[in-house]
Image (cartoon, rainbow, N blue to C red):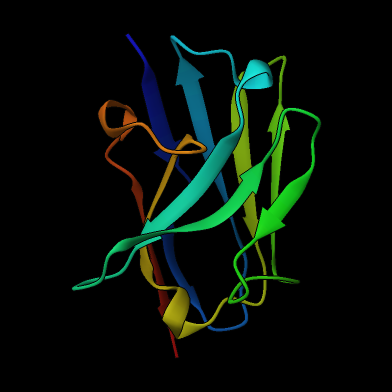
Amino acid sequence: QVQLVESGGGLVQAGGSLRLSCAASGITIRTNAMGWYRQAPGKQRDLVARISLDGTTNYADAVKGRFTISRDNAKNTVYLQMNSLKPEDTAVYYCNKYPSRPGYWGQGTQVTVSS
C-alpha cells in the first residue's frame, strides 16, 4: 500500500521560507517521477513542481525561481524548498507521482502566507 505523508507546512510571513517533506512508503521514489501539487480554497489542485527519473525538474510559472524540488533516494523522501513566499502561495500542498494517481493522495500540509 502506497503512503505519502507530507509535512513541514505552517504559517509564515510574506518573503519567508518553508521546506516541505514527503515521506514515501510502498513506492520507491527513485524509480518514479514525483510531483508537488497544491490546492487553494475554492480552486482545483494544480501541479507546482515535478522531478523526473533523471533528476530533471520543472516548475509552474508562478513558482519558478522561488521553489526547488529535490529528492533523497536513501530516505525515500521528496522535498519542496519554498523561498520568497507570497500570500498567493497559500494552499494545501500534496505530493504524488507525476502524473498523479488518484489513490496516492495523502492529507497534505497546509501552507499559509500572511501579507
